[in-house]
Length: 236
Ligand SMILES: C[S@@+](CC[C@H](N)C(=O)[O-])C[C@H]1O[C@@H](n2cnc3c(N)ncnc32)[C@H](O)[C@@H]1O
View: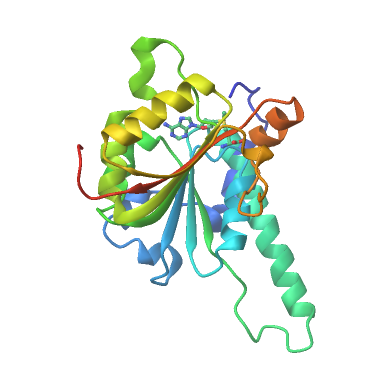
């Protein structure tokens, strides 16, 4: 994602520090300390400006969500949305008659960093679900290993996710999609659902739209979707 350098981004990010995982290595092996509870943790890689992560946290209020984005000026928007959303819910809870009685949902954190290092930051079996939406297609063959669905990444996901966890993948890029399905199968992941036109599905209620998805579907591009189970066997 190319974008002009944002003004005051360091200050804007610092203003959202409650929602930022500043140094993930500090939490290696004790990720419960990030949220202060033992709820399952879902992971989104390449969260962009955060719409999906916000929706995921809202739909899964009994889980926690960590959204990873490597470009600080992009992650900044996800952080600001997470903060604004929390503050809005907090204000509306306080306005209730018995304000403050129940805790306000606080289950989303953003991590600014490169997914290459996920297994340095998170111990085996940390996560219970993984979401990859509209990742960079790296169309030149020499760069395929940078794709977030490349065998090296799948082997890492198998480590940091609990066996049997679900991975969901969306893209508008047909070639990346078919290549990724091959990689999932080669890794021994169980394919649970495939759609080459997600928005043509009869029931779309499970879907959480991302920024790129909104743009691509408005342009009439079909959205490809796969849901797979990360099995403990196979390669990797
Ligand atoms: C095309 S955008 C999609 C953003 C969002 N998921 C959406 O669907 O609207 C891909 C995002 O993934 C991020 N990204 C790509 N490779 C990454 C990596 N290795 N680690 C973390 N973020 C990555 C990019 O910086 C970019 O913001």
